[in-house]
Image (cartoon, rainbow, N blue to C red):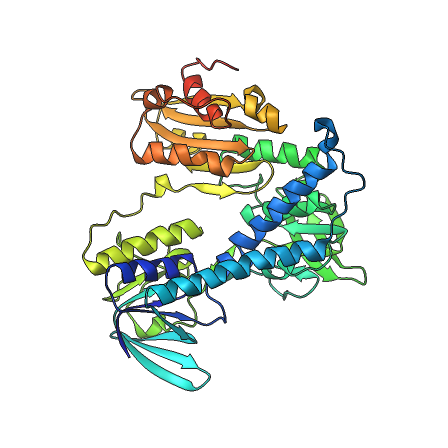
Length: 463
């Protein structure tokens, strides 16, 4: 079999690249080792976790709706049905990806793909190996959860995969790691009634975010009953008859044994690059990640890499998708713009949610900018009052001299939706003055974004 393009991996980056290649008229195939298309994001990542987070939000509303006159006597969580609903959403979209492949006349090849060099791929299937030839190849093999040494996932020691398959809500959960995965699951199960403890080795929660955002999330988590131990190190984890216990050295130097029914290991992800035949190519690695050029090309002619395996870009589904668009455009001889790493939106779907783009205040100062900060709290926003969720703020980091928008950081209700305006503004190279002259509809949550831009010059109206 011979193709213009073969993509290894069918996550958001891989399948989106396949669709775009088909639109450009390239004869395309996609290789997937799992029974269903869609990758980690669809099956054990973005989509199922956000389904659970949405249910957690509704359940919280049911518990606390009396203030709005919505009396729900004895609301009950039917967790097996919650999980089944989550799975229906996943299965629906997996079928959607299959449909996109059929519509685009994209061949789906089941099995493991291994590079042999010089445009050849060995496809391992149940019927034996097949050799596929491709003028171009995109590696989109994704990542998997890192595990602490000496541990293996099971029904007590969980990664993002096992925790999604629980059929009952644990009475207690110990979360190791306070990145996006850790804090999202903490937010889910806290609202479902689980006693949650987070242990993070670094000094703050969500350490890639602006320092004030981290502080606000920790404040809210503690207010709602989540114990947060930052600057803490987990030294030993053992299974017990009741679940698990972990020896933790706290930030004050004291040692504590923490016990829980379940433990979630959320210490990051490792790239899936060890079974795809990189040794048969000229591809270069950086700490296990594939090094690429501005058009996602590797050091091996005709081979590109996108998504979680790429060195130097965050492991986010929307990043993988854009990298796929760039790679395919380059292959097809179409115009393409390399990713601007300072324009990548971050989104964390906790309550309150987090959305961010660009530099934090500390990063901007470290880069030599003389910064001006505009900050507006949601307590001054009418729509936040209507939905009854006032926690959080919008923070704008701007260059004092020219009014360049260096970064925008939001923590609050649906912050991950509100950040879109800031991303578009920065991509269009808008200034603070541009955004101050942009009319924001009333009453909306995104009015708070406009107010934060006014606040850069001390002219917010409602704060």
